[in-house]
Image (cartoon, rainbow, N blue to C red; front, side, top):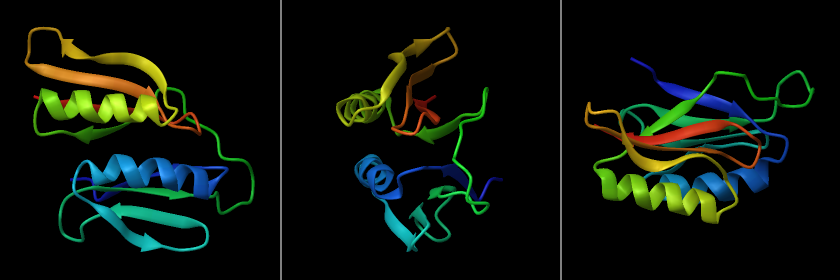
Length: 122
């Protein structure tokens, strides 16, 4: 149902280096690349993720309770992406592992701008 999610950044090039590596783990690269906006994904291939410097020129801020999630193929990919994010400077918000007994497996982290992300599989 969602086409893409856009997150704000105050340093597009730093953030882009982070997302280039994270998105490569899902087999996607940049599909749009402009001076103030970059998006990753495959046209027609499901939801993508974008980064933008705010249009109004004000500082980008994170939303309390807002989170975007990357869907992984299996727990091994969750572990790999979570570890990569931490290696790239992400802040831990909950290590990769099972959540409850529903088969939900996830790791939570914040990107260099403080945006909360999750990588999961079910």
